[in-house]
Length: 316
Image (cartoon, rainbow, N blue to C red; front, side, top):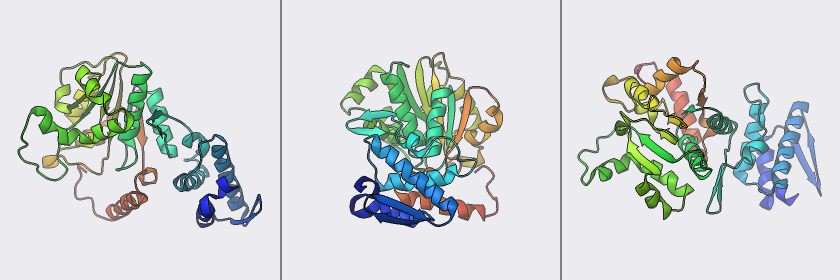
């Protein structure tokens, strides 16, 4: 009961706040009352919590909030599928005592799509784990010897500001653009091994312009910030696919930084490839944000604001 209610009844307060049913706790018994649908949903939430506790994984306040949110989603046809316990106990990668798992139903669908398709597009706002989960799947594939190398790339487009001349070698110049990919790598691998893997070419981090003319075999290729590719760049990248290779393309179509009104290749590609076999499009939303909870609220607030504005900028 202590594990279900949480330290100092922290989880109980979340359930009382987020569930429509009334919750009564006496000893080792929890009673729910109220509207029948609310009582059923509350009982299902408690069952999922107990299932996770029995795996030995334990619960956090964030996990309890996500269980309630997922059970609410599952009550609709759109949210049917995996249970919260299946989502929150699916291990992708363990590194230095930390386990990387999906945290929402859409994230699980995204991870499953990467397992089942050769090319996957992950489209959604900042903080939804698009790049991070793709990186985890790439490292997992490398460790399982399913591929021989990981290739990480993104277009060198600045986010609304001009950095001007950057001193140093070519690597020094492109490093600011690729830093988010390095940050994710450091979360998943022993930091001391990363320079060795980069030197050996087992992991390659390069700007998108360097992909032209190549055929990438036995590789896991991730294109990040794909909303800043042109339609021609997107076609160039996708046609680099070689034998035994997999691709994940991630981006946020609401944050296009292309100059001169250019059309985003990521916005155009779904209409072009939507019916092609072995290609999956996964959409994540503000409900899938796994950064600070305020990030999800910020994204949702911007979505509401932009939905009320006249469509002035068609390329975005």
